[in-house]
View 1 (cartoon, rainbow, N blue to C red):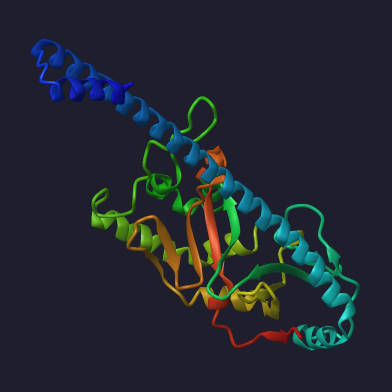
View 2: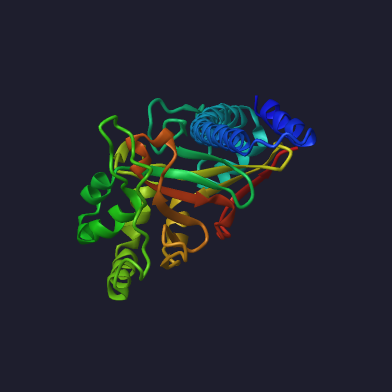
Length: 304
C-alpha cells in the first residue's frame, strides 16, 4: 500500500500533474502509515525481548537441573570405583588408616554426606579445573540462626542477597541488589563486616562445608576431575579437617564487583540467583573451586 502511494505520487509528478493539496495528503498519509509500522515493530521487539529473557531463565533452570542429575550419576560411579577397584581401595585404606573398608552406598536424602560405608562419610564433587561448585545454599535467616554473631550485619548481607518478592512469589528483577561498595555504605561499615567475617571464619567454613547434622558430617572430600572432553580424569580425596584448616589460613575480602565475598581463591559466597526468579534465588550460596585447594596431604588416583 505504501509503495502504491509513492508510485502514484511519482506518476503524477512525471506527468507534470502537480496537485499540491493531493501531494500533501499522500505524503502525510505515507508518513502516518510508516509511523504505525514503526510502532508495531517496536512492540514486537519488546515482546521478543521478553520471550528471550524467559527462555534464558528456563535454560538456567535446565542447566542447574542437569548439573544436579549429573552429580547423582557421579555418586553412582564413585560407589562403583570404591567397591570394585582394588587399587583405590588400598590407597583409601592407607590414607584413612583402616585395614578394611565396608561396601559403599549412596546416602539417602539431602545431606553433606553423599556416600558412605557405614563408617567413612564422603562428600562427592564433580568438577573441572578452575570450575566452582555449590557446597551450600540457604535463606539468610538460617545462616544467622547458625551464626548469630553476624546478625548485626544482616542489612549488608541482605542487600546483596534479597530482592523484593512479588505477589506471584517471584523475585522482582526490576530491582537491583545493593552492592557492598562505598557508593552504598561507609567504608567503616564494610571494614567492620570483613573484620567480623574473618573473626568468625571457622564457624562460617564449618557451616558451609560440614553442616549441622552431626550424623552426616563428612570425613572426606572427594573430587572427580573431568577434562574439556568430558572424560573422567582423576580422583582426588582430602580429609575434611585438612580442607577446613587450609581455608582457615585464607582471609575474607569483598570482590571489586561488590556482589561476591571471597576467602582466598577456593571459597566464595554470594546471592544464588537463577531458579527462574523463584524466592530461592535469594539464598546465600557458598561455592568451592576444588582445583584451587592447595593441600599437600591428599590421595590421588589417575583414571586410565
